[in-house]
Length: 225
Image 1 (spheres, rainbow, N blue to C red):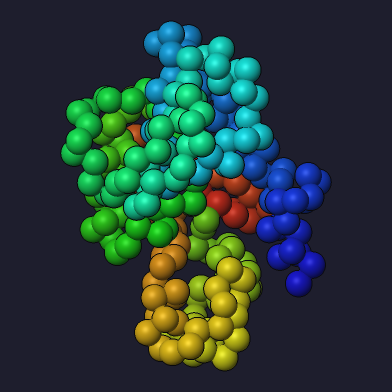
Image 2: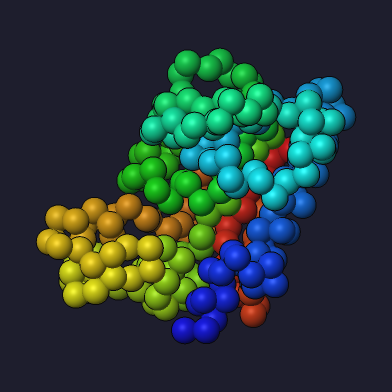
C-alpha cells in the first residue's frame, strides 16, 4: 500500500516517516540543550540504540553540549572508535551496574515493545526512570491501524495464532516467511504494542506529545524533563 510505503520510507526526506523522525529529533535536541544548560554536559543512555540513528543529529551541537552517548544492546554495537559513543552489552530491563541518576538523559526509540512480556516492560520503565532525571521514550501505538513491524493494516489486532499462520504463508514487512510455527510465534511475540493506558502506567511522571497522522495517534511518546 502506498500509505504504508510512505510511512516507512526513511530514504525519502519528504516521507511521513522522515518528517516524524525530524520532529522527534527536534524534541530530543531541546532535551539535550536543556540538560546542557542545567548540567554543563549531557550524558545520554540510549537503550537499544545504534550509531546510525544519531547520524542526522548536528554533530557540532552534540559536541557543544558535552554529549556522550552510551548505547546498550544485548550485543554491543561497534562504536567505530568514535569518542562520542560507548557501546555496552546489556539488558535494558536490568542495569544494576549503574547507580540512580548515573546519566543526564535516557533515550529510547521503538524499544519497549520488544523487551518481552509485561513484567519486563515494567522493569524497562523502572530503569528508564531511575537512571536519569530526564527521559525520552517512543513506541508505536497499538490502536493505529498500520502495524509498523509487519507493514500490514490491522495485522496486530488479529490473534497470535492467526498472525503466525500468515507468517508461515508469506513474509510481512521486516519479517520473512517463517519456516515453521516456532519461528512464526517468536516473530509475532517479538513486538507487543502498547495502548495509552499501559504507556501512561509505565511512565506516569511524563508529558505525552504523541504523534498523530490524519487525526489518529500513530506513536506514543513520553518525555520527562
